[in-house]
Every structure is written in structure tokens, then in C-alpha cells.
Length: 370
Image 1 (cartoon, rainbow, N blue to C red):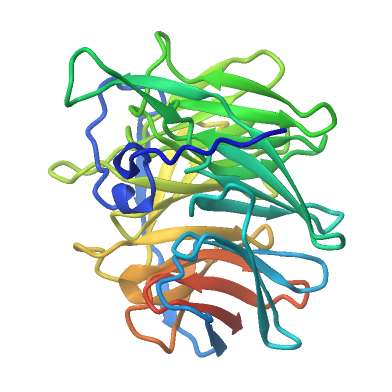
Image 2: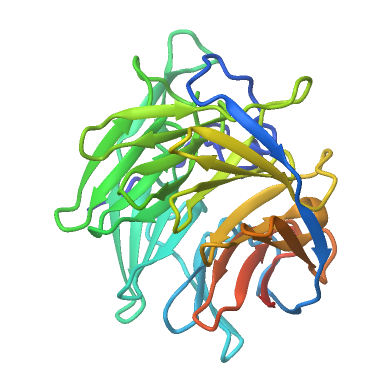
């Protein structure tokens, strides 16, 4: 288990800043084209918010994950830290990852309260044990691409791991944004498996972003560069792709997070609109619901969290709010965040049922007790 040391050109990494502008038209039209626009009621609800400024400015916080003790873990891309916040003591701890290059995106907490994270810039999957403060890193391969400034040169790029998933067997799955692939780390052997999403293989075309697993063990993911979602059967390796239909005259969706609910339905966030998308894998059909906010020129929905069969939570920058969608009643309850224009991104739930989220623009952690 080693790490890379060479810092790569910042433009070669498809990070969130690039995603804000990444609304590409689809080249091929995969299956699954049916869709409905569903009416949903909206209610303004008051909850109890707490907000905690980070120790430094411009922390670049992304996705939170919470351990069984209630500690909130997250990466600080602006400060090159893996960090945690203890709600009981109201204190932050910050740790510099080995060979880190300010690229921590996805963070998840395992059942043993150890922390896994994806380091996009340094191109590895990291593992941190808070008990002995020990880091392990699992270095990923690189991909090559022609240098746009020179026809005779090739650029070596990280695969850019983005979001993580811990499956039922204890394996770590992740999206490889630069490599247009899905990766799997067998934590028992420390070995990787890679599943290219195109044939012939492409680089930086699909930009797979979010990832989840359904009840049958199938892996689902979003392709932020092509307005598609995909499924991967880990046993057979079979891939399928589906495109949510967009109204005439509108840009394709910029798909971000994806999550599976207890009934087997898939929920998808759209960062360039305020649409929450439902995909029924049995019917191969899409339904879209409009969350609060204009969604015009403002980042829309990013983080998603399933708390029950009827409960979907999301961060909605277009309305500067945390939103709860009741699947049964088709009702959005939205909770306006006290800090204006805070750009809420990642979201997670603590053992006490409080909802935690990151505020990218205001450099804060937020907590909501509905």
C-alpha cells in the first residue's frame, strides 16, 4: 500500500467546480426513456438549526459521514484535511492524510467506526482508524489522455475516485470520474477490480459521480457528463444505462447523487435544476418532482439521504434549505437554513436522528432537528 507523490494539473480533475459547468448533451440514447412530471405540494416548516464555523476559512467541505458516537467526519479540500466534529464537546479535529493533495471527496464510516475516504488528487482510497490514529492508503492506477496542448504528448491522470459505497460483503465501491469506470476494493486482500463503462474505453467522457447499491446487490451510479444513470451487476458484469427525459428546450440534467430506498426505488439529485428524480427499475420509468426554489442559474439539489420508506432528505441550494420529501403524500417540507446563500451540499443522519449537512459557501457544518 503506497501513495503517489506527483501533483497533477488541476484542470485534469473533474471536481465539483467543473461539475457546475458540466451539462453536456447525450451522444447515444440508452433505454429507459419514459418519464412523468409529478405535482408535489410544498410546505414551509420550522426546525431547530445549529451551525458551527470551521477553524479556518475556505475549508472546502464536501460530504459528511457520522459514526456511532455521533462524530461527524468530512474532508476539507481547501485545507488538505480529513476532519471530524464532536457535537458533545463542540470541537473540531483535523488530520493531514498521508501524501494528501487536497482532494478528499467521498467519506464513509464503517460499522467498526473506522473511516474510509476517496482522495481524488492523490489518487488513492484511504482508511483511517481513530483509535490508533493510523492511516492506510490503497493506491489506484492512472489513465492516459492526449495532451490538448501537444499532439505528440500524453497526459497521465489519476482515475479520480469520487464517491464511496460499502457493500454487504465489506467491499468498497467507488466511481472513477476520469477513468469512466466503477472500481471495487477488496479490503481483505487490498486488491482492486475495475469495471469500464464504455467499449472502447473512454477517459473523462462519462464522469461517473454518485453510487449506491439496491436490495438485490446491484450497483447503481450516475454519469454526470452524459445525463444517464447506470446499473452494474457485480456477478455477471452486465451494464445497463438509462436516460431521464428532459422537457423540450431545456438542458439535460446534471445528475449528482443517487440512493436506493427500502422499496428498491432509485432517487437522483440534479445539480443544475431543482428536480428530484425517481427511477423505478422494474418499470424502467422516471418521475420528476420539483423541489422548492427557482433553479434558474442557481445550483439545485445535491445531497440525498433516505431515512425511511417514505422519507427522502435533500440539500437544495436553489432555496437555501434542507428538504424532506414524503413519498406517500408527495409533499415537500422545506426548512430554510439560517445562514443565507450557504450552498448546502452533503447530508447525513446522526444516531439521534438529527440531520447534518455541509455549508460550502459559508464554511460551516449545519445540524437540523426537524
